[in-house]
Length: 458
Image (cartoon, rainbow, N blue to C red; front, side, top):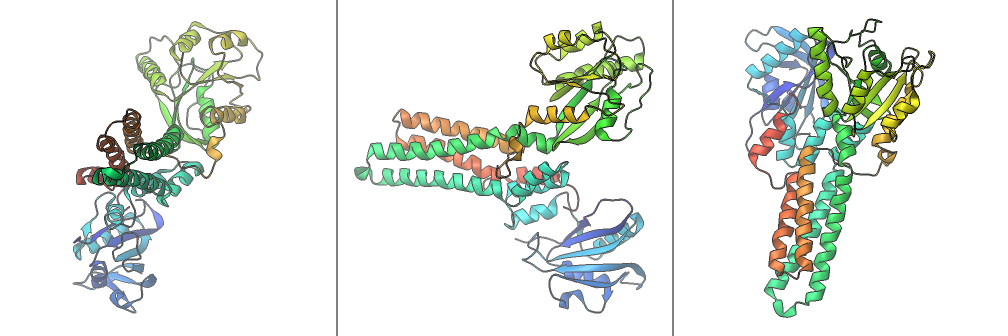
């Protein structure tokens, strides 16, 4: 497999103490050697060592940067190619000059995700592990990070390979049966195939049951904070985020547009959306915000309906109740430090089975109870099981659903005593679909599409 040498900045752009420029490929040592001046040439040093020196313009010997250079020789690297990492000062100008110097010396700028793509193409990791690398980078909570890390380490891959092995054993038995029909015992074959297909179906089902939790951990829970103006939505957002993200005033209609912020609630990543107060208004700008709020209400995974403990229910409250009917809701009765005017029994009539939490967002009272209610709705403690394998990637979920359907078809065929070569078609389909999860049977276009979503330098 011939590949050119690539380079990219592996650390976030912006000012920082240190930046890392990663170079990978057969000519990485030779390219950096052209511009590195230290005690030794990099091509002569031991692998996995770090060296102090300076980078210079090869034509003029002008010093460009003071650097530490890490040398890692194939195959003991992430890409299984020779890798050189140049550690320089983290200023924008410094990083850009070092990168330009490396590129002008013979490297090519890496495409998004190309380092991880090379690790996949060289057999260092499979496709599900490669996708988990990006999930690990984007993790917003400790739980999400642990799920991604277990996939990077190959937990999902091993399970998928075990399932494929069961299907291979089933197909091998079918081939033997077709080649030597005189030795076939029909009941034995039927039971063997049924047991293997049932086992695979059961494991796929267990994986799919984790999909909703895994997807939440991966992407976050889209959570809309809705309510009439001035009931405390923005104060609630600020309490959860622990920062003054939203303007809080006594003037109704202060929030005119949608404000989004991520927050970690008991390990559940919430994408909090503070919406404009839903009410009838003549203000054109506020009316646009209210319409956005109504649309977001239908798209959210969770709705936090905020009501005022110190006010009676109004027509706008009932309109929100109607819009949120049948959706996952947590009722928040805010400002409970003030005298009660709201009819709580009337509220419970509309949402008899939904949790109700009393809070005072400004005094940050009841926020812990709200966090507990949100965590219970979506995880019910099950996420604490550290040995579970979660599936969170939409591509994986789609493939697993198709594989489960193929297993159903195979089981129907077995129970209807169809010829085993017909049953084999469904078994093989499931085997191929599971192979797509880990990249055993995918096309180049899909691989390119997956890695194009990665950040540059990874």
